Image (cartoon, rainbow, N blue to C red; front, top):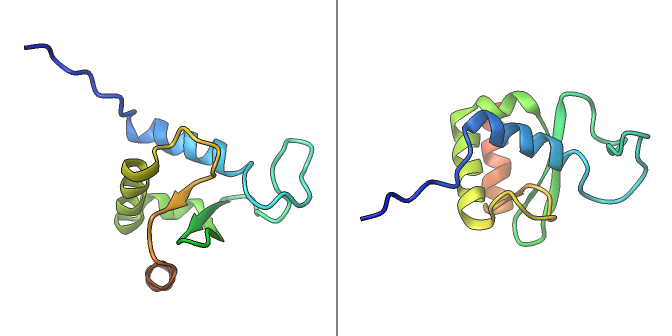
Length: 104
C-alpha cells in the first residue's frame, strides 16, 4: 500500500499565497505600480462571495478568526487556490454579511 502525499500546504503558506494572489485580482480599475488595486487599503484584501461574486474588502486580521478559517477551508476544497478567479468564498452573501457583522 503506497502512502499518498498530501498536496496541502501549511496554513501559513496558504495565507501568504492568498494575500499575494488576492491583492492583484478583482475589478480592474486603477492600480499602483506594484500591481495592487488602489481601492484595497494596506492591511486588507479582496474576496468574492456568492453566485454573483460580490467583492468585499476585508482586514487581514480576519484570517486568524476561526469562522473565517472555516470559510477558507471550504474555498480550498471547492475551488482550490491555484486559479485566476481571486479568492472566492463559497457562501451565500447574506450569510457572509452576517458573519462579518459578528466579526467587527
